[in-house]
Amino acid sequence: MQNLNFLFDIISWTLLLAGSFFIIIGSFGIYRFPEFWSRLQASSVIDSLGLYLILLGLGVQSGFTFVTVKLIIIGLFLFLTGPTSTHALANAAFISGLRPEEKLETN
Image 1 (cartoon, rainbow, N blue to C red):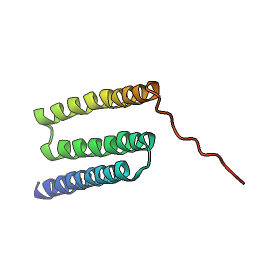
Image 2 (image 1 turned 135 degrees about the vertical axis):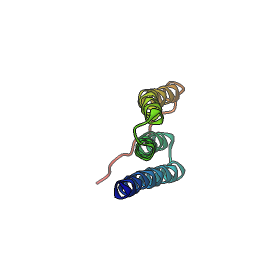
Image 3 (image 1 turned 180 degrees about the vertical axis):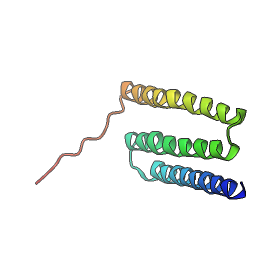
């Protein structure tokens, strides 16, 4: 039983560290990208992946308890509201006149 707990600890910490890594990379993307649309992409995709990995790691760490059910509900809520809020933000920016930059290819 001790080896099984150790295995769950390794899996959960791996998921937590991977999620934290993706969130840190996403924050560097928000800082480094030149325009709003690129930053919106970095914040929505990378941070969502990091968040789901962290929630999964917390679920593995807590075992099958009521806390895990709460984490699943939080994950479902964020799965539904994350793309909706990103779309609302992009739509508001587009309607207000912010357009994506178009790069012309020259040969």
